[in-house]
Amino acid sequence: MECKKEQTLKHCGCTYPGCSRKGVCCDCLSYHLASKQLPGCCFPPAAEKTYDRSFKAFARAWGL
Image 1 (cartoon, rainbow, N blue to C red):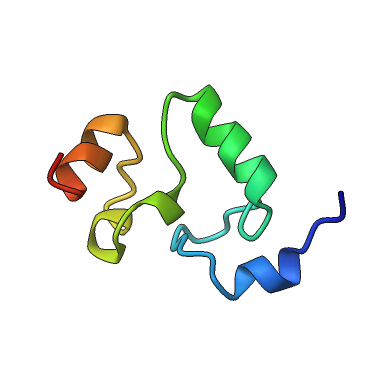
Image 2: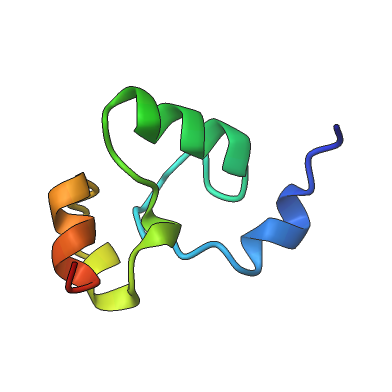
């Protein structure tokens, strides 16, 4: 599979400065799931900016 980093960067919601995985969704997802987290693109903008990627933060952000 070919990485489409240039295309995904246009829609990447990550605001973490210097993130080496920005726009590389497969790397980002693998990294966060290994840490029992979700990537920033799963969160609404205000919640994403807290950098709390936990499942609890996800549930809180979406009112679950």
